[in-house]
Length: 146
Image (cartoon, rainbow, N blue to C red; front, side):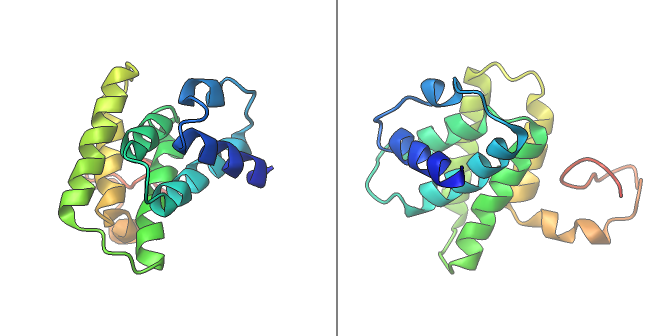
């Protein structure tokens, strides 16, 4: 199934299929996890599409909070694992684009999405295990203490 999802995402990134029509299909919980991971892969691999940032932002802004966080972590780790430079300006461009997509899609939990976006794209989520439980200031990436 993940190969089918990846091919569908490539069509979305190549503007052969719209993001709306891609999400019209009946998708399972696991499909959303695959879409989150594979959209990061497609974003990093796609070198020629001028609209890839807008497309990626539109895809991830449709996820629930946990899948959204997972998608951004996958993107961050895709850059890290492949030793691809991930400069501040590029991160900032991604953040602004995702913020705009969240607003365009009328997301009701905007503040929590932004908190998780900042935590994941900065790599701060890697230090969640060092947070003091219920410290009153910081929440872990997924907002739940173990």
